[in-house]
Image 1: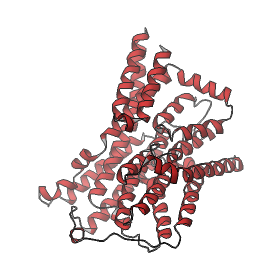
Image 2 (image 1 turned 180 degrees about the horizontal axis):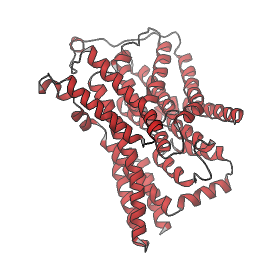
Image 3 (image 1 turned 180 degrees about the vertical axis):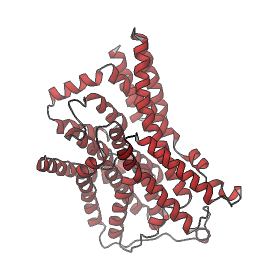
Image 4 (image 1 turned 45 degrees about the horizontal axis):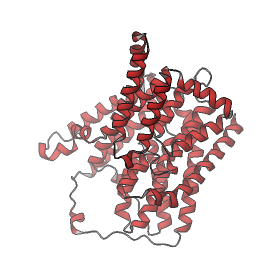
Amino acid sequence: MLTAIVIIFVIAYAAIALEHPLKVNKSATALIGAGLLWTIYALSTGDHHLVNEQLGESLMGTAQIVFFLMGAMTIVEVVDAHNGFEVITSRINTTKLSTLMWLIGFVTFFLSSVLDNLTTTIVMISLIKKLLDKHDDRLFFAGIIVIAANAGGAWSPIGDVTTTMLWIGGQITTLAIMKGVFLASMVNMIVPLAITSYFLRGREVVSPVISDDDCNGHRSKTTPFEQKLMFRMGIGILICVPIFKTITHLPPFMGILFGLGILWMTGELLHSKKEDEHKEHLTLVRALKQIDMSSIVFFIGILLAVATLEHTHILTNLAGWLTKTVGREDVIVTIIGMVSAIVDNVPLVAASMGMYNMAQYPPDCFLWEFMAYCAGTGGSILIIGSAAGVAAMGLEKIHFFWYVKRISGLALIGYFAGITVYIVQYKMFH
């Protein structure tokens, strides 16, 4: 049984990593993998009551993450429908390419800590399309956006799916992860940013020509008041989720759903006097239809698939083997981070959470904080290593090998610079 489970999991993992050449959506692969793994486990285990109990336990943990993601993604869609992000983008104005690079990098870094790296990447790449005419310039900016978005998401409990998983699982707490990983994440972004801006020094921003159609605008019109209100409410709700968890000790998904209800009611009251055809695109009902359900389904499949490895004690045995063979926690986690550039970091972190016992590795210990950094930023090394990278790849038509040649080296330097900072910082204060 164990051999069959490992083989199926490896095949499913490989299919997820090779999603683009195989032309099979990774969500389908994850669901098939989860189905096969649980089927084999159920058929080979005599105690079916135990299997159902374990499945229910795994489903409860998975549902918490899924509900949280659905709520957060819907809030972002509502803000975007009201053109709320223009509150930020309209303030970026410079003629120097290197200065613009720094501005974009820092805005991306802090925005992704509040939203998430995927959403931030989409917003910021949409912005640079309005600011830059040359495609070559936009490609470099897109590469830096991917690095900055992943770095910004790593130090915030709501900025990256993997950090959120560790937060919801109880491996990290809000203030500890922010204090522990912020500096390393900042260095991870600043080093590649400094190198890139050095080569762009002296170059001027070439803005795209604005056509009459663009001036008139085809996007749904909203008033400045509506834009600011929905932007501030959306960001405020996301920021308040960790506070809600700290005060009530309820799971984060409850806070995000509570906030979603408040935003929904606000939108209904705000547009109550408008005709249906004018407010339909602004409603939360439409936002629910717009969220990326394919990604949600992928998380469900991969988390349930990893759960079988946990219940069959395969992950525990793997952790023991790694500890015995490699020995050092920092090296093990560094390797996990680099592997996340090749395969999705969600299953890697999910597997790691099952590999290490929290009785031995309590919340906010070196292992969990370092894993949040490495898994969150290691995906920047390759374009397919993170959701942000895959989004940038589609939006700006970035070729895999162009990214390897131009951006991967920068991301790798930033990755190890951040590792050095985190280890030094940890040794100084612990």
